[in-house]
Length: 271
Image (cartoon, rainbow, N blue to C red):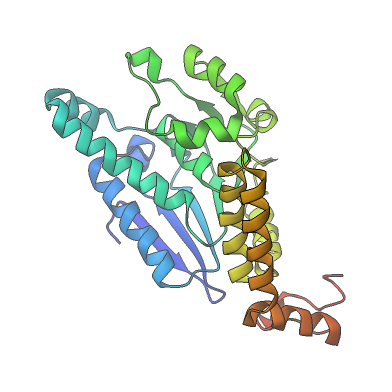
């Protein structure tokens, strides 16, 4: 990893990626976008069980770096298009990672920082964190992050907050679905630890298929016959898969399945 992004992995295969530009509130530049893209590829190569994405210091991410924006303002449209496509590809990679992902929102998030949160499966934020889709105040729009933010918060909320650019407090962000949990200072890591414990109890291949299943349901909701066919094929394949057979055998034998580390609880604790 570069100095812009720290990469840590624990004994259970849980990766933590930390945006490491605290002096500029972990704002994106081209180098950080590239580092994140490489890191997400590495997460897949490592077979990570879960990913935690967070920021160093007191901010999660302020979005685009001002110097980066200034440079791109001097570039032509073709260069801007290529630059935006690299950002879009990075976000898409995060959104489609096979392992569960958690945004550890340790502070404020604006613009592209909101996009990162929207690409994660779960998002835990400190109660004082503030959010904003402030691009219109610069004469821009949240175009690259919109494919992830709009489904996350819904069309009505997107219309309001993308048009006004107003700040959003943590309670409102929770209400509109941007974040999944709010915690007071001092409880962020403990809460995420508990979520990771829950995630490690699930079969990793099943969790990857859950994520693809959700995308499939959203894509095929207007075609019920196709959706029924594909969901039936998916569950049939999983029932006869090695992981599915192991999960069922473990349940019947009242033992932990093989994917759970020995320290992660007993069959009785999991019900």
